[in-house]
Length: 313
Image (cartoon, rainbow, N blue to C red):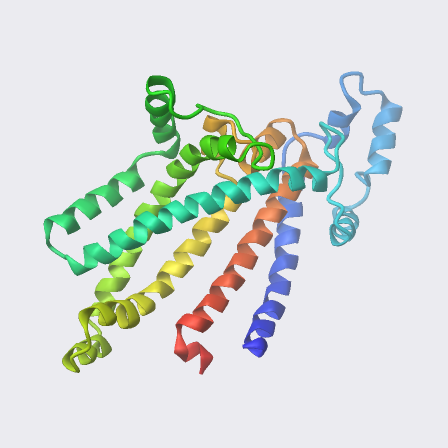
């Protein structure tokens, strides 16, 4: 196991380097001049020259990348051009919000999507299968922002059960935090649950037709053990892939949902940074999101190691 983990860990190093180069190059392609944005409305030539020298903007792009990458390795992602706050500090403030929202959404998706997919596969062709497929299709078709607005109108405006927007830290008020996060998490979770339900159903149908499942049934193994130990465990492999990718997308920031519910996470942060041409923040958020995807793929590989005996062999 340790050797497998080390091989996968070494394998992601070139990916991280390429991602960092890609993120830095994309930032250079954004319109506008950061020196002019920093100089303000007066744009004094001496100030612009000082800014270019201070932030190495007058250097070739590969030299700028070297300075930036050196800072990244030290944990320094630069300074926000808009707020003059270190980008690392901003990420530390926003990351816990996005992680909580992502984990709550994934938990809702798992609780809804996997049981629905298993039941739909076991009851194929029945009204329960039809209902599950219609529900999944609805979850995939309804836009998150529209569902969010409908929930605000119904749950917050009409019924007054939950706040319509805002955010409260769990350390300040755990109950209020749960009230503010449950609706956006449900909006995100239902869309992911629909995807998970479809993949779980497909995987279960394929596994249930396999030879080892027929052999287990022929031996007289109880149906419950056939489903849980033989079929469901092997059907989890594609579900793990989908789950890690979806979690990575959530950690990258659920832009529309965070905007609708005014959640101060990565999605809102990167939208504000793009509109304000805050290049350092854009680079920091995109790099952090990319690293989250890479690490989650590593977690998925380790999950395969435990789920699939062929990988352990």
